Every structure is written in structure tokens, then in C-alpha cells.
Image 1 (cartoon, helix red, strand yellow):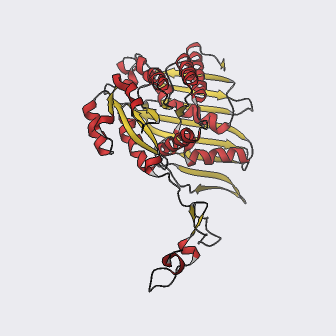
Image 2 (cartoon, rainbow, N blue to C red):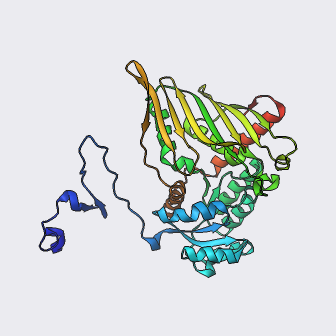
Image 3 (cartoon, rainbow, N blue to C red):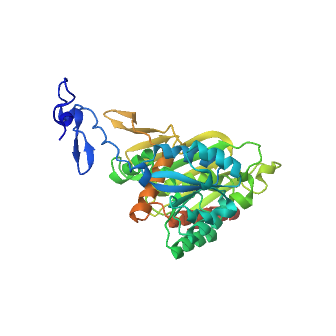
Length: 389
């Protein structure tokens, strides 16, 4: 034991145990210092040493990779970015320098297989357009790299099935980036359902709408996107509802609409309203659109109260409200929940899975289920009738 750890810095009063903490099992722990009326403080983080973190190759340097995923590594505890794959190597090298990635770790799409030469690459994140997910998942799996693939998983159930089969054949894990299943607000809402605090869940309302611009973009391409608002942003309503209810829907209905004369909607739908009916009797009503001012919310209707999550599908800014009886009145109160970076949460989860050899919480099979349900929703909209799932 050093002099400082025993008595503190020379000439100063020795720190208390509450101030300096202690080492237990190789980790630093601090006794609770707040009063019992305050919520307890969280334990200190236990990050993996930087050189031992799971290195990710980022495949595609579009908006989601550059604006969200790469910055998220700064908040990761177990993952780091070690290579880039891009259609524009010059752009890739500019970005690589910003994140301390060497130029020789920047590859063109044609050279994706050269990732196997990098001992510091142990997993890959795919941020490509939906229609390219299958090819690059199969290529990465063939060189032994675990794959974290952005949602939606693919354009069709058949593509999703092929991705699951390829990863199983090559013995690598496949995870779909359903970030909302890893962030605190959705987890808190799921806990409200499971706890029965407000009685039985009866209905769910989920909305994810935004205004699509006129600029040419891959989202308006049927070949690249596989659909319009439904697979891009409506998928959040679908997957989150399945996650929150904790069941699989037994039937679906849907109505789709696209304003006539607008070239953006010649190959993909602008809007869709759909319902999911679950075996327990829960009914979910969902709305998604590229033609409405931004709103992203989930409302859970229980027998004895309501839970509302504002900005539920946004990258940040979510708020959590509970309405219930308080004496003779209905009281709506906000529950403060500490926000976390969604992308850092999912990257770290997959990194730990790769490190420990454990299956991810949102594997390829989870994405495949959504692809099958979306296919049923398109059928329901086309045939104007309920479709069993």
C-alpha cells in the first residue's frame, strides 16, 4: 500500500472511504454518498483497455456511418473503429485521419475481402442501402467476420433468409441494428409492461413520420430501399411494438397511399397506416409517412394508466411520461431517465458478444421476422384484407 492510498497526499487530511472508494475484483467501487431519499448513483464505468477493444470495419460512409456510428465509438466502452470500406477512397482517408485510422486500413468495395489481412478488425458494421445488405453480409461472413447489419435487414424475406443461412454456414454471428432495443427509454417501457404496474396492456399507438425532401436519394429507389416509409421508418413502429408487447402478431391490416404525379413515389410508398393484432388481445395501431411533419412517439394504453414516450425513435431527446390515478385525479408525471447513445449501446453489445462468444439480443432471425411481417403488410394493403402472420 502506498503512502497516498493509506493517508492521502502529504500535508493534507486523509480522504474518507466514501471519497476515495476501493478496489473489488479488479474494479473501483465507491460507497453511496447521497442521502437515502435520492436515487443511488450508478457504479463507475468499466471500459475495456483501448488496445483490447473489438475493432470494427465500417462498411459504407454515408450519413448514418459518418454522422452517427463513427462518432458513437467515442462513447463506446468495448468497441473501436479500425477500418473503413467505401466507394470513395479519398473521402475514406479524410475520415480515417479524423478517427486515427491508418490510410492502409481504408478499402474500396472491391477490396472488401482484404479486411481479413487486418488483425485489428474483428467485426464489421454494414451501413449500406438495404438492397446491398445481402451481398456484403455474405462476403464478410465468408472471410470470418461477425456482422452488425443496419435495419431493415434486407429487401425481402428471401434475402434475409439467405443472410441468416450464410452466417450460420460460416460460423459467424449476425446482429441487426435495432438500436431502440438497447436504449433506456424503450427498456423502461418494456419493464412497465412486464411489471404489471399499470395492469394489463391493451393498446399500442406508434407513429414515425417525417417530411421527405426532393433531392435524389436511395430511399426513393425500389431496388435499393425495397419499399418506402414502411421499411425505413415504419419498421421502428413494427419492431418496437413487437419488443414492447413481447409477442408476435397473429394478423395484420394495412393501407398505403402515395400522392399521384410525384415521381418520388413511383416505385415506393409515401405513407402507410397498419395494425397488428397479438394473441393476448393487444392491438397496435401504427402510422408511418414521408409526407408529414416530424413526429416519433409510442403510447402504451394499460388498464390502469398510460405510458407515453416522446421522440421515441429519435437519436436523442426522448421523454417518458406516466399517467395514472393519484387520489381523486389523474396525474401525468414525467419519469427522468438517463439518456445514452443508442449507437454506442448496440456497438458495445455486439462487441461483448464477439468477445465472449455469446449470441446477440437482436440476431438475424429477429430481422427475418420483421421482413416476413412487412411482406404481409404489403399484401394486406394490396388486397384490402387482414393477413394472418
